Image 1 (cartoon, rainbow, N blue to C red):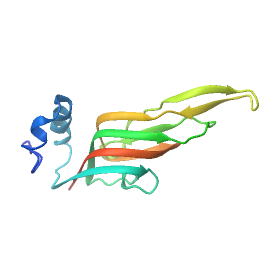
Image 2 (cartoon, helix red, strand yellow):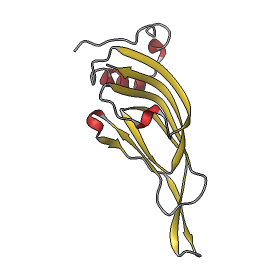
Image 3 (tube, rainbow, N blue to C red):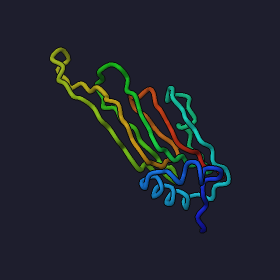
Image 4 (cartoon, one colour):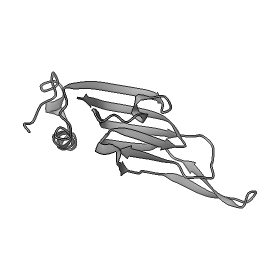
Length: 141
């Protein structure tokens, strides 16, 4: 399959991109036969966002992903899963601080902000992360 450049971004954006992003783009460009590319900058709640729904005809390329945790301590650990082609879990990042609760005699977890750079995914799933920031592209068939 021939390489396709980012339409309208060759001279303005893609030429000045980092080598990490160029490698990601060259790989992700081969994963689906995309026809439309849409730049997206999103900040807001994870619940109700388009990133939760799997669709075989879309692929997100994230230059930057940030996830904000629920503000309180919880019994369970917080995590994010990034799903790849075929809705298979690819990445399962989790970053919590742990404290022993002497009242309940149990370990409590408090999520810490996650920052990920240069990833691709088709959807995300979240446990105890409520907000997110996405800066990147959506490729659709």
